[in-house]
Image 1 (cartoon, rainbow, N blue to C red):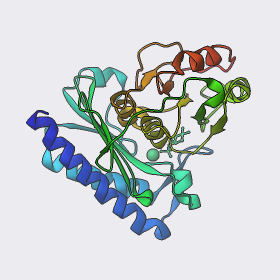
Image 2 (cartoon, helix red, strand yellow; image 1 turned 60 degrees about the horizontal axis):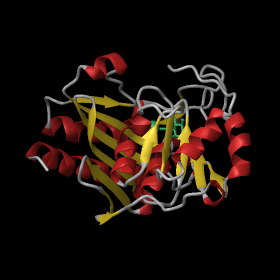
Image 3 (cartoon, rainbow, N blue to C red; image 1 turned 90 degrees about the horizontal axis):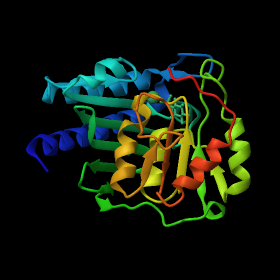
Length: 271
Ligand code: IPD
Ligand code: CA
């Protein structure tokens, strides 16, 4: 691992831990607001992002910081950037507000459009996932691998639903209706970064969603790939973090899940 990556990994892990401690501490004192009819944002989302941003930018002032709550780049600008952090300071805000423990922090570091570091923390579960390109994926320091399930009937699969279904063309129910009869069971946990981490460590065999943003998936993609899994768009094309559509699996069920998705009528207009 290069010194550049090793140093950034240590700082990203520290930022995830500090933000996680803050999220647990501040839980009872949050004020909840709305970004859209169903899209919640809290003082904790903003506080967590401020902590992560301060730690990363203090150490690496030359890097670009792209966070859900403060913005910073889009697909066009991103492709020209040398080094960029892509951060979701609180993924699963609804779970956090409602007292579920399935929420997390997602921190990714990209160089010239390529993921080099992915860190996902689930603070209330005491779980810290990390991956470095070419170095494998880990949960609390132990190596993780995707599952060995190879049939849809044995597959535990997760999905999610866009908060703004009308704007984004469909609400995923068509795919759910097609896929549920094929699989062992479906989960909707409510935090896309944790869904991807769950594919990486073999708790889930697959995950699909559309209407996601770059910060939801930037770190999880690397975790899944480094754990031996496969990530793509809905037609099997290379995943694009700005396209909003993602299919992530243990590799063994990838083509089966893509075939099931191809039967769906739900449209999606990329943002
Ligand atoms: C949300 C979660 C959810 C997904 C939504 C995301 P947020 O992130 O990842 O699982 O279905 O599309 O927006 O808003 O809690 O950071
Ligand atoms: Ca968020």
